[in-house]
Amino acid sequence: MTRSETIRIYDERAAEYAKMTNADADAGKQLRLFMTHLPDGGRILDLGCGPGAAAAAMAKAGFIAEATDASGEMVALANKHPGVSARQALFDDISGEGIYDGIWASFSLLHAPRADFPTYLCALHKALKPGGTFYIGMKLGTGEGPDRLGRFYTYYSQEELEDHMTHTGFTITDRTLGAGVGLDGSTSDWIAVIAHA
Image (tube, rainbow, N blue to C red; front, side, top):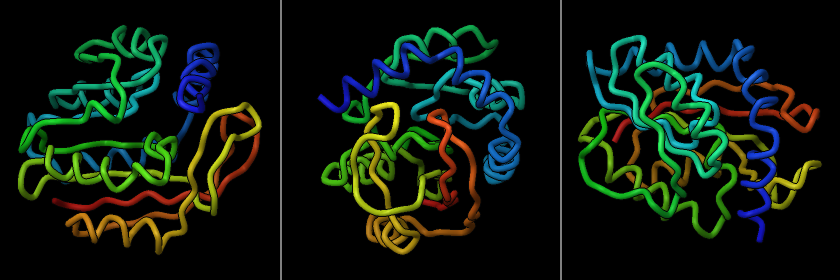
């Protein structure tokens, strides 16, 4: 039930979330850094694309931007951006081998249950081309459960997250720590990691 409730909340608050993400300077800085690791015209998966601001920036920069989100409302907003191809999908739908030059998972995989997280990381590693670039943004903390709005979250420490990534086969090349206010109005510490397959 936690997944359906999380999706319902994003469907209901898609427009509000779009305004918030469009004004996020930290996300823009992280996206520019991520794109410096990619070949010109490379193919990128925006996993959990939300309203599509990042995918739109990727397309504008000349990349092939494919985007997925579990929320139908978010997918509809993402598809309004020129050059963005968005479809509704769950983390369970990650498949394929050697498809992407880059995968952008900005504060999306934090909605995955802890037990499923390693499986999703393995699927993403497999979907990347050899040497492909992976970006993941996560909130820092411990435990899992609903936030103030009822969205399901799983929290990791920096060490836990990086252990999961290296165990999967990723080579970590960059990390950024920060803090920000989320849709529920609370301030959270976060980590953004860039790694290669």
